[in-house]
Image (tube, rainbow, N blue to C red; front, top):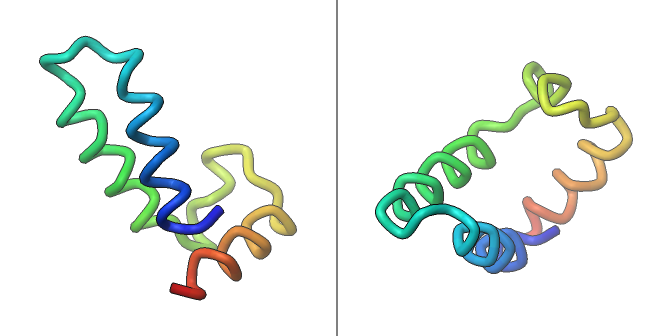
Length: 61
């Protein structure tokens, strides 16, 4: 998913979080996505091939 698609998905997911916590939720998810790299993607149960495909699309921006 691209960065724009991720932003939309995060905004949609934030609707399920109490309103007072939505800003912090978005901040945390954004931070985690931006810090995702080959050394830590396994913590999210992402396969190497999934990470490689995601990274390829993510970096096209």
